[in-house]
Length: 329
Image (cartoon, rainbow, N blue to C red; front, side, top):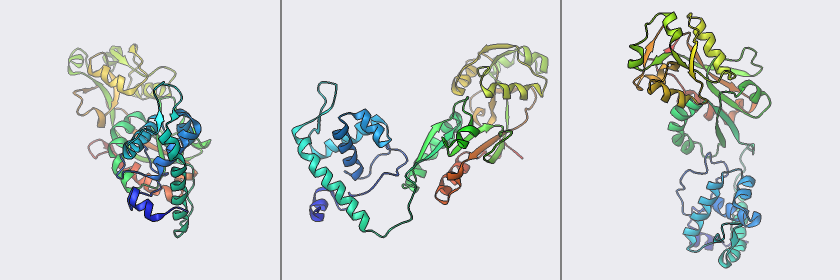
């Protein structure tokens, strides 16, 4: 049986805390030592590999390495010998600490078992796929506050690529939420929520636009930057351009990533379509007629409709909302 007095003296009265539901293992820890660090140490000791321990725990390898370094710093000695650059081997101090770490983890579990029971949570984390621009410029910028306010809600955020079929990965259970800007699926088969309608337009640098007349035929013949032809986004963009009598013929490049497209536009390599909310401070300027507004779409699987996921949906709706200046009714 763990000696609680020893636990308090050695690790601090608030040290025993379960973090298994934390959203990102890279969030700085407020305490000098946690049960999670001990669990990571034991996993590495048993697997004899940082990579295999990370796979077992469902976290990144850098996260495992960081927790081991933090634990070693706290204890004041090395737990593993990494000198040969290969399999990590327990030092003599690390070998001696294994039994103590197991005792502390088991003691923490006993303390939690003695607490009043709470409704059981699913051990599976929610998986949220987000379009790369939304992930970088909306979600990640507000994620710290969400993590602090919802420490027990397990969520993995992943970038949705231009070839991600949101409808299919929600239907087959690979994703619980898919969030992107574009058009909703024609035959959804899943719950679809339109967060907002947002403006998007054809953009280019002022220098490039000065050489192009504004009528449709001139814009059609201008240099364009579009997604790869086999990407769903490419056909969607072409349909929207065709609605305003623009059918680009001079495609100078087809980059895979939206960020690369934006940088090429800023360099004056060609025109492309871009969302007004992301382009307003880039130095780019509009040309040609207005396009039919795009939709900010959220696809939801069954687990996303459960009560425990409500804070996540509220966060996504708020973080990915469209300001009035760029919103369409």
